[in-house]
Image (cartoon, rainbow, N blue to C red; front, side, top):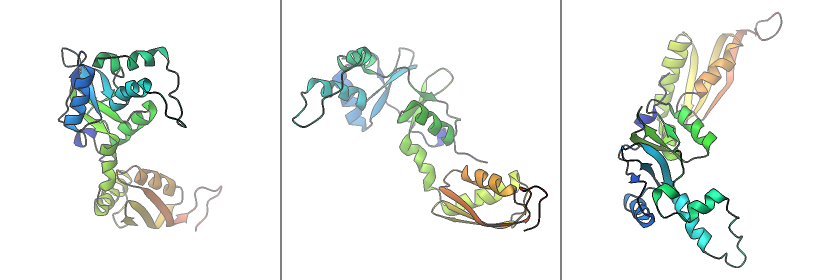
Length: 226
């Protein structure tokens, strides 16, 4: 199946800062380019970290007294105190940067974001030079695919190329990313596998197989016809 690669979704024009970039210059860069984070690169252009609005806001939150009725900022750990007191990108950044390769699929990138608890990934080449940035919003763009495009991929790639079924073997309907499968299968045990494969198609929100029937129930001992 043709899973979308993040090099087709990422932002390619990426502004970065050096480790010695001062605090106010980072804020100015974020504002001028209307971004929420920038990679920090070394003298050879290799990514060493990322500095985000969250990293910078720590300083503001730590300096202000809590208004009446508002919770106080939690006590900082040693490394957090160092970041709050930082004045340059290399002191403020989150490091190492969480990076991805351009040939990763949307699913691989989303999984890494979830595991690492980050909102974006720096896309790098084999030498850790910046190629782009992919964000949560970029990954969600796959859900903007047209229903006809999703249906075509299910019929041609999943049912045809992968499962070797005739294009007309099953009825496939897609409405707002929700897939409904209908028709008759040779064996009942095929249904869960087909459902799982359809669910992995980019842009699919859900899959229903309640309209599927079968000739033989191979999931029970001895089997039997439906």
